[in-house]
View 1: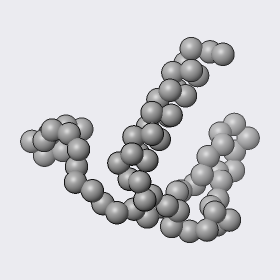
View 2: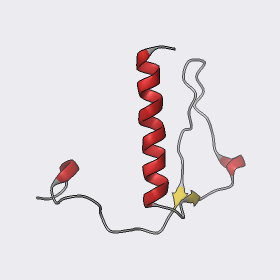
View 3: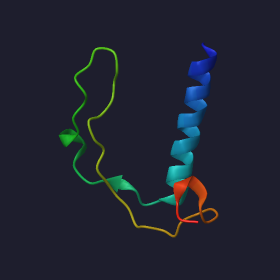
Length: 69
């Protein structure tokens, strides 16, 4: 394993855990069969990921992450 790969996996895992904690009802907006992948031999990924969820109040302090101060 490469250090950068391990770090990237931790960041991705943490991001997904936080997303699911904050948006517990997140769900695909289209059937999974309608998702399309990028045509690339080097990068595996979706062209888009349409989802539905119930909005919740913002978490954190005002002005964080470029929001209004």
